[in-house]
Amino acid sequence: MTHIVVLFTNLGPYHMARLTQLHAACRERGWQITAVELARSEADYAWKTSLSGSPFLIVSLSSNQLEQTPFSQLLQRLWATLTQLQPNVVAIAGYGRPAMLAALAWGRWHQTPTVLMSETTAQDTLRQPWKETLKRGLIRRYDAALVGGQPQKQYLANLGMPIAAIFTGYNSVGNATFAPAQIACRPRPVARRYFLAISRFVPKKNLPFLLSAYAAYRAAFGTAAWDLVLCGEGELRPQLQQQIGKLALTDSVHLPGFLQQVDLLPYLAHAECLVHASLHEQWGLVVNEAMAAGLPVLVSNRCGCYADLVLEGITGFGFDPTDQAALASLLHQASAGELGLQRMGQAALQHIQQFSPDGFAHGCLQAVEYAIAHHRWRGVTVGDRPSCPPSYPHNAP
Figure 1 (cartoon, rainbow, N blue to C red):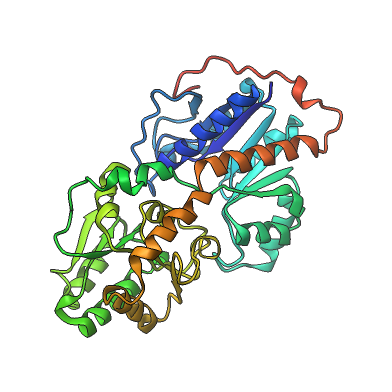
Figure 2 (figure 1 turned 90 degrees about the vertical axis):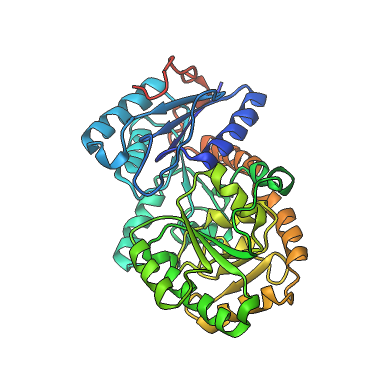
């Protein structure tokens, strides 16, 4: 029996949707999975995700916030957990955190195949040649990869991973949770029609630009203009509130704060269109959520999901996140009925079914199979290794 350990920073709703589907796919093969998270929470993502009733084993290395957990303690627990679980394959979310590199090191030390789960693209940050050189050496240590889409696949290929070793399906959410038929009965949170934006209030999300473009649209469209809802929280809230006041948008821009998934559903159910204006973004899962709710999307062409999710004029439109006039024009056309939002929403709902937890499970298993078959330590027979994990409680060890 093959035992897969999947390592994430901390488990949010979309992680659980992916892992539940992966568990079901593994059970059909007689395989099993264990999910390991570094901590129950982290500062950037205040999810409140219940782990009770999970059909698969979950191990939380720390019950505290990640930033409050000493790295030495985290490393010790991670190493001990992997050693006790003795997985046949370890799937690791990213390589940016030292703990994720420690998991790779564990795999190398114990001659265990590793799968990199990555959403990084060549354009999502300023690339420095010396760092890219180091990264090429690092990427060669993984046996396979699971990525979000084509830009992510191309980036890893450019770093030297064989194209045959890279599989897609990583970036998905629980589409069924957002299905229009499921959420339409939610009470309307805003009386007037509105555009919706969902993001952390941090610089890369480009919210001051969005507000300026919205103000220009509102000035041109007049009293028939739609409202704007900005769901989220973060360091820029005071600055954004000040800008809203200066632009005389207090009555038309709504700031409901950070919302748990269940509280976000009414906003998705009744929005006219999602706007996502990031200057750079590895993927942008809020676009998945909006499309799963049947919304058309206006998405910055700097987002990692743009190439795979935005079919121009079909599921939505892309825009340059530095061109205020272009975004204002799109907002104007949308509210004037010139873009066919209902048609695009239906197309978005249909298209996003290709990016589902089932796709994550399928891609992950493809990557696992490739990693086992092409693992460089030929002396180890992966299927003969211990496969049954010990009886861990949640939040162990």
